[in-house]
Length: 289
Picture (cartoon, rainbow, N blue to C red):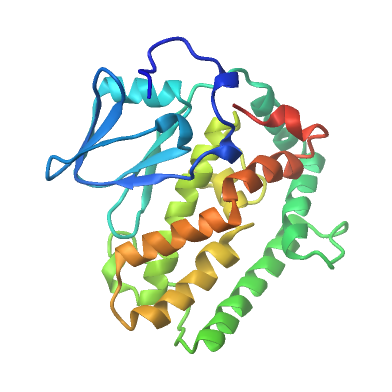
């Protein structure tokens, strides 16, 4: 891969939907040489990384990154996210430069108008309640419907996979105290947030301007994540709980989650769903290179 300090254009890079979702790295160094960006692991193995075809790098504990490597990632429109070990807890994301602010302006316009903001929320809930009449529902009423749906889903999945379930529980900083199902839910949820945050940045939107969630660091990311959690996180958590038989295996969780992301073609869905949820008439114009 050619060194990316030469001037490149968005047209020369793959769209978000065409990129590989992410690579998770821990205990090593991200730097560049004369020809490529590279990863040097704890055993000094060197692996070239084609960042122009990656949507995000998820950097775990023990990771160092050089200033030059960050510049290359930014030029390639590859987001850099900092996450935690085992649970892949999402900590922060580096902002990727965007060509213009058209998408951000549209998002802000929708959010600033109460009627338009509620219409966006209704479109999001309609994905989960396709047969429900939502035109007269308030945001609070729809959130209540969703809470009931998710609780029922947990019980349904527990019965389907023959797994005990005492409810959603997680104490920050005490990951290991949760049961296996909750550990998988926490880790896959956080990984999903990282991927969506990277895609939102790459498409020129803001993760901080939400329509359902509020009072949290990444409300728009949480809004979008709820569209995909049922299959990517909840169903997977109960299935893996049965398969792992009481022993949490971070590699198995990460591998299974990544495969579901690829099989779902999540990045393509995000490229289509975000403009659709925001009511954009011309979806093609909203896609970023």
